[in-house]
Amino acid sequence: MSLMIREIPLEERPREKYKESGFGRLSDADLIAILIRTGTKDMSVSELALHILKEVGSLEQLKQASLETLSKIRGVGEVKAITLLSALELGHRILLPKDIHGAKITNAKDLYDIFSPKMKDLSQEHLIAVFLNSKNRIIHYKTIFIGSANQSVVHPRDIFREALKNSSVKLMVLHNHPSGDPTPSKEDVIFTKQLSEAGKILQIPLLDHLIIGYHEYYSFYDHLMK
Image (cartoon, rainbow, N blue to C red; front, top):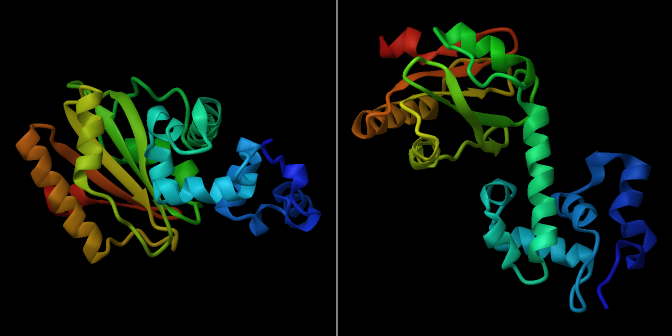
């Protein structure tokens, strides 16, 4: 018989942790355990949650995982996989503004005005790719990376895979600096150059890369790409 959350010692139950101390005390595995609710005959729900994280590698990889990939993890199955993916999609929709598909982007400020309200106060770095049609209208956008304030690991292929999947002909990217200072780092400059070069090869040009601060932004186009 699978193990339910109620079978875990009271002081270790994720829900009890939350009621007593809020989400700050909950680990990534605790949150997953709350969502999937049950374990297996061999693993408690908390052990299964840890197993899922180990199998996918990180929360970022969990966000990118397909239904098929998650379903094949021992102890998960289709129902738990759909539950996890639905929670991730809900968070994605809350984070990003709605009703922007079809919005026309004529300059960096247009993009900043749309996304900055949800990005400027984030405690973690988020990198969002915005995919455009030939008339510079948004056809899709996606959070490509979520990381800590001092970590940003993303490859251009992750972005252009999405661009090709959505038949995008132009691309813009933006990410926030949790410090509030939009000044680009050396890594930001290198990444932008890599993305620009890849865009030229694939004929999906990078129009701009914005860094979002508290009340201002940095546009690579304005400073380096003109």
